[in-house]
Amino acid sequence: MFKEIFDEFIDFITSLFNEQKEIITDFKDENLIRKIFETLLIVLVWIISIPILIVLLPIALLIRIKEAIQVHLPYKAPFQITYLNIKDELNNFLSSKYVIYIESDYNSIINEYITNNYEKIKDEFWLRHGLQFVYIPKIIDKLYSNYKEIVCYNCPNITDENLNLHHDISSQDIYKLIFSYCEDISSNNLNPGLIHICFPKEKAVLSYVPIPLKREKKIRKFFEVYVSSMRSGPVYHATYTKPSSEDINDFADYNFLPEAYGLIDDVRSKIERLKQLGIDELVLQKLVLPNSRPVISKLLITNDFRIILPDYSNMEITMRTLPKAVFILFLNHPEGILFKDLPNYKGELIAIYKKISKRENILKMEESIDDIVNPALNSINEKCSRIREAFISKFDESIAQNYFITGSRATPKKIALNRDLVVIE
Image (cartoon, rainbow, N blue to C red; front, top):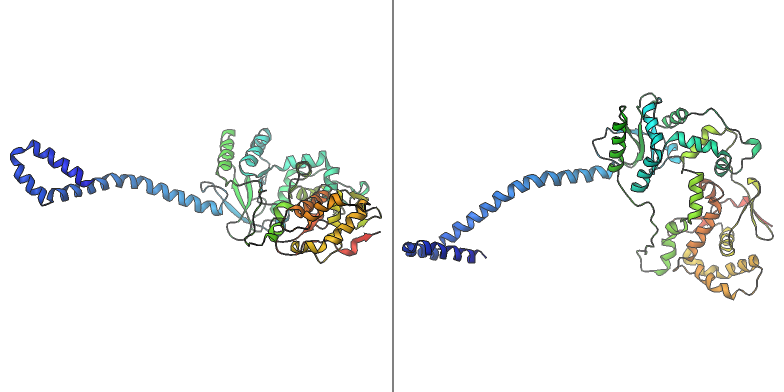
C-alpha cells in the first residue's frame, strides 16, 4: 500500500517538476523519499491517536472502577454509604432481597412522599432488580387488617384463645427493634435512609444510605438515582442445568434445588400475600405476645392415608396420590434416599401407591412410577415440589421445612421431621 501511494506521489511530483526528473529519480532509487514519507505517516498517526487515547483512557478507567465497586456495593460511589455490623439473628428476618426505609425520628416530608408514591417505588425496585421495597407502616397495616390469617400462617399452632395482639405498636418500635440488631450504632444516630444487606466481605452487613431531608424534588431524585444505580440480576432461575459429570443419573440430583423448590403461580401468590419473606416475622415479634410462638406439630397418617397435623388444630395436608406416595416413601426412610438409588425403591413405591389408591391394577400408572424412580429424569423433583407446596401453602417455610423433602446435591434427600412425632395408624 505504501509503495502504491509513494509511486503515485513520485509520478505527480515528476509531472510538475519535469526539469528535476533526474534528481527525483535518484531519490526514488535510493528510497529516501519513501523513508521520509513513511516517517511522516507514522508521526501523523501518532498525532491523531494521542488525543483519542487521552479521551478514551479515563473512560476505560472509570468503567473498571465502576465494575470493581459493583462487585462489593449495591450502588454507585457518589452515595454516602455507612456499613453497619449486624448480629447474626437479623439474618433470620432480612435478606439481600430487601431495601428497607428506616428512621430514628419520624420525618413527615419523606413519609408523605413514600406514602404517595409507594406503588411506583415498589414496582421500580421489583421490576428492575427483583428487590422488595419494605415500608414498615404498610407492613403493620397489612398485619393489622388481616392479622389472624397471617399470624396463623406464621404460627400455625396458635388458637383464637391465645391470639393476643399489641394494638399500640408504631413503626418507630419496629425501627428500634432493627437498630437493636446493629452492633455499632444506636437508634438516635441515623437520619432517615435506606438499608440493604450486602456483602463487601464474607460477612453480611447493612449498608445505610441517608435520604436528603429537603424538598420532594430532592427525595424523588434520590430514589431515581438509587434504583438506577443498583446492580441488576434475574429474579428467578428456572432453567434446567446439566451435571458436570457425564453420568446421566446425576440429572435429578443436580436439579433438585431449583426444581423441587419451585412454586406454581397460585401458591406463590398466596405466600406473597401472606408473607413478605422474613420481615413479617420481625414485625410479628412486636405485634404478638410472647406466649404465641411456633411449635412443630406431630404428623398423623390415618388408616385412609390422610395427612393430619394434630397440634395445628387437626390441619389436613392434601396432595395428589403420586406425590403422597413419594412423601410416605421418604417418611419411611429417615436415613434419606440418594436419587441415584431410587430404582431400588420402585417396589416399595408401587406397594405404597396401591394402598393409597386402593387399586391393585396400576398398569396405567406404572410409566409414571418408572419416571419417578428414574434419576435421569426430572419427575422426582416435580413430586418433591408438589409436596413442598402442600405444606408451605398452609404455613411458613421455616416450619414447613421439617415436613417436606430436603437435601444438598449428591447427598441423601430426607424429611427432617423427628420420627418420634410421626404416628401411622
